[in-house]
Length: 210
Image (cartoon, rainbow, N blue to C red; front, side, top):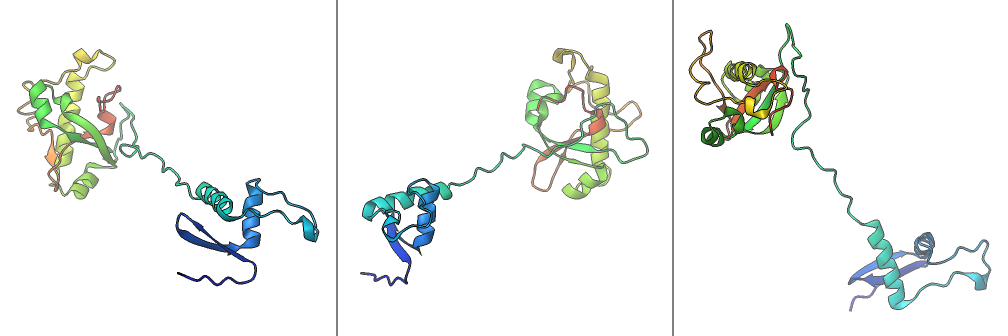
């Protein structure tokens, strides 16, 4: 059996099989705080607060300890970082912020609607170049994808119109832009994730349904 040697003014007790040693003044202070004993100003020798004993003491201290060790709930984390979202706000002569979306090619193929592939927004960057550096994508690839979506959004996403009029057909938006550049809709990062990049100023006023 373990022998506990206490110094003057110390109290030892077991709570849940764990031995706790504390100063009697500390314990009295805790009991007083929780209204379990009443403080007496300038107490006489026979007016000291009565100390709970045995199992009662252990129960009291266990309750006090539990109240002081409750885990604090962590605040919920947003699904993705906040980003500027100003539709129609041009960024003349400056790098254009770009939003990054997780994209599901299979869903877009099944629905024949390119917008259906947008799963969720995961990041945003101050420029296409920053996004290319972060994901290790070839230079010019992100801006090419963002331009593809800008062209599609301009032509198909009729702002302030019903969703039924905001259709980006897979059969229509293929081949090249009017000025001869090939459409690019997505890129794959080093982890194999399929991503779509859209300039924030080009995002539809109603936002993609993600």
